[in-house]
Length: 91
Image (cartoon, rainbow, N blue to C red; front, side, top):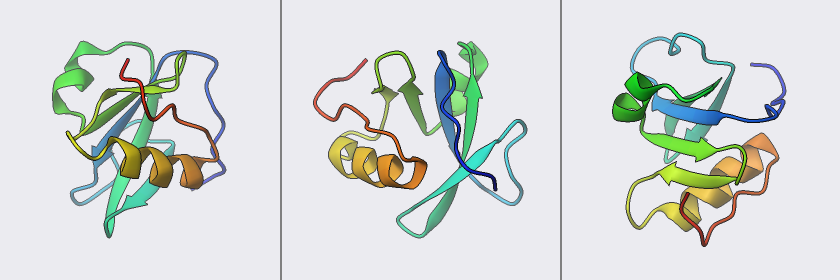
């Protein structure tokens, strides 16, 4: 995968990879020995329900994340993508 380039606005939809990269995936991250695909996009309601996590690019906060995992995932994803995710705020 290529180096992460932060979109100017929109969302980062993060999907756990099952067998092949998710359609539209531009990047990948490793969390708890699992591969997740990162799909930058504008608001896609279909993605909202099937994604594992959503990061709001405008606020750099999670709009969706596993409860109790916010700090761990913000740190892990942030380090791998080279971004600072606001850990104390939910979008």
